[in-house]
Image 1 (cartoon, rainbow, N blue to C red):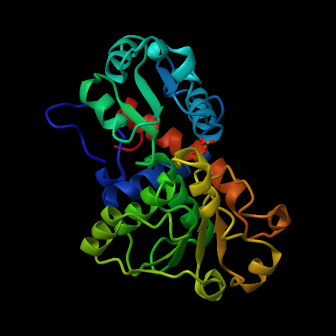
Image 2 (cartoon, rainbow, N blue to C red):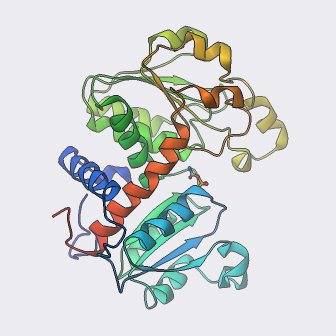
Length: 314
Ligand code: CP
C-alpha cells in the first residue's frame, strides 16, 4: 500500500501499489476482522459511498456489509450508468467531486479501464477500485490470495493455474500481478486462443522473476497444480456474439476434472459462474469458491479500516 504523492489519502486502485509487508499487514488485519466482536464499531460516524456503473453481487454487497460491520454508514447507487447523473452526461470526475462531499470513502466500479485512476486523481477521499472494465480488481485479488493462505496455510511455493478468459477477466489479471509478491510460484495460463493473458502482465511477471507458461491442455495440468483459478468468459466485453461463442465453453470443470486434481489442491472462482464449473463440483471440499466470496467481507473490512483510520493496521 502506498500513499498518493503529496497527500495522506490512501486509494486502492491497482495491485501494483502493494509490497509484501503491506500484503501481510492486510492479511493479518483480515484475520483480526474475522474475530471482531459484533459490538465493536471502529468506523462509527464514517460514511462509505458505493457507486457501481456495472452490475455486482459480491463486491458491492461485501463492501457494504464490511462497512456496516465496522459500525459505519453506507450510501449507494447500484446502477449508476442509468440511475445517476451519468445518464445526463456527467463525467466520473464530476461525480466524484460531488460524492466526496457526502462520503468519507468511495467504492467505484466502472466499465472503462483507468476510471479508478481518473477518480483518484480528483478525489479528496479514498477511492477503492471495485473493477474498472477489463483493467483491475484489486480487492478481489487480495481476497483471492488471502483465501489461498487461509485454505493452504501459505502463499509461496505454489503452482497456480489461471483458467478461462485471461484477456478480459480483470480478476485473473489482478491476481497474476499480485502473485509477483510471492516466492517459488509457478503460473500456468490455460485460456482459449482468443483470450490470452495480456503482454503487460507477462512483462511484469517476467520482471519479477515469476515463471509462467501457456498450456492449452487442462487435463494435463490438473494433476500437478495446487490452485486452480477458474474464470467466466466475459460475454459483455466481446465486440460480437460470434467472438464470444468462439471463446466460451472450452474449459469446464466437472466431476471428472476434479478426479484428476490433487487431493490437497483447491478450486477458486471469483464468481459469478455460468457453466464453467458444474454444480456437482460444489460439494467437493476442494471447491473453495463460496468460502472465497465470504472472505471478501474480512478483506474489505481491513481495507476500509486502513484507508479511513490509522487503525489496527498501523
Ligand atoms: N467477483 C466479483 O467481482 O463479483 P461481482 O461482479 O458480483 O461483484
